Image (cartoon, rainbow, N blue to C red; front, side, top):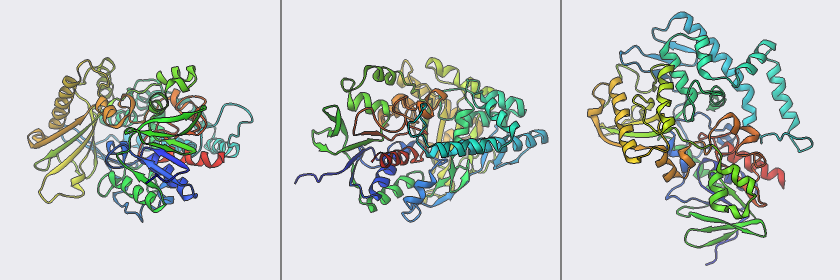
Length: 501
């Protein structure tokens, strides 16, 4: 039986592919959504918390009706110390033996950073502006953002300009003294990136994180019931209800190009599928260099794409424990952070630059079974370890060394934890690249750095979601505004397609 024809083929059923497919289908477009894996979800399985789910996506896809509920909409963060002197951060409240000067300074600094992030947040929900005249930039929206920035007052406006491109270490050092607090915040700012606290421009990615929200709460960390997979499961139900045709185990081998125009795809088994428009939610480098191929593209574009920065610096660790761990009395329903100090975070980055494993990696820990216990009493520990080398000389040796370093770090802060481990699954950045197709194991499908943001993401000339060939659109985390389980790039790409019709 011949395959029915579709207006649009979307490659990749991760959050962005699902969001784009739903937006298009809800406007009457017939959509075929292709997923290489056995099930949809893509790289969403790498995340264990939600911090930037796009409210437009959540509302339009009616994810609550399709089963999305929250175990917690705003997890507190406990900064774990090996001596039990923990700090607990919830909003601007700090519990623990923090000096009053630091308590007041953190309250003021957090409020300021949230104001700055809120000014930048509207940029997430629009295509990046072009730096040219008469190119259709949304001047009213841009003017409103500028007005909002000016309304902060002259002093705050100048402060935004001062710190926007600075490093997070200096900002924290200017305002705070407690090493535990500075370490946790330095870890937060650099999480998922390839930069240390002293690296230039390391504050800007933190502002991008702070501009996100969970269930209407800015800068909140949400935990869905059933884990992060519950978000994509609800999205799958929504796209199915919208009439999208979803095919799993359908890996695209190449994108069909005829007469310098994209006309469809060829699957790995040789099946040819045609459509007037192809939307790729895979990493731009993968889409352009692997699925399109250099022979169909401008040589300059190919060179720039090959040199795009895509270095992953985070490892993903899952532990199954035979009993409940004790992090020196810390609340196990919190988001737990082990970072030591801002200097410890920097020291964990230094060896990774040279392909080595840090001895004391920073850790973000979530214990889903503390919220939803298992009947057998076992517990799951979900860990993001920062930093990890993406290109070591010996992959197997680096993986074993990284696992040992993580377990030792956990055991220092939860004595006896290593003895509870029944199973440990560690994904290094190169494992993430192999499994999820993310170049360099970079979670954002391209580093989220100042030279790769806004109208520079993924590259100048293709930053507004339209690909370099007619009929091709880009809708991945490698596009503006970047990564996370947000659906924003996919939604923005669908809006750009509508505007082009």
